[in-house]
Length: 72
Image: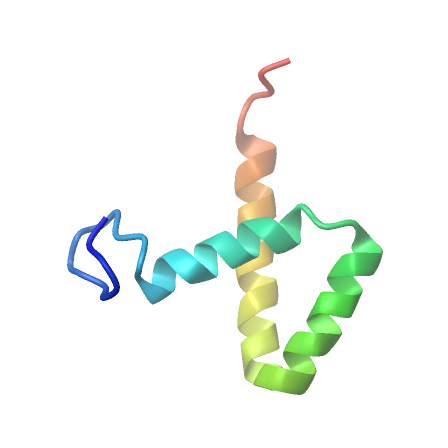
């Protein structure tokens, strides 16, 4: 979209918000065992506050996915 630096566009794919949303969607789709391992790494590398924020975003992503109608 806007190159190597974030911009003010709401659909900027270089922003921190976009990165966090993508990570949350990815983690929400992981099998439970993988998710537990991922959370352990986040706790070790980023700390408890970052883990709590990630879990919050994952929960929101999961709820949003459950509300969307299935295409099947």
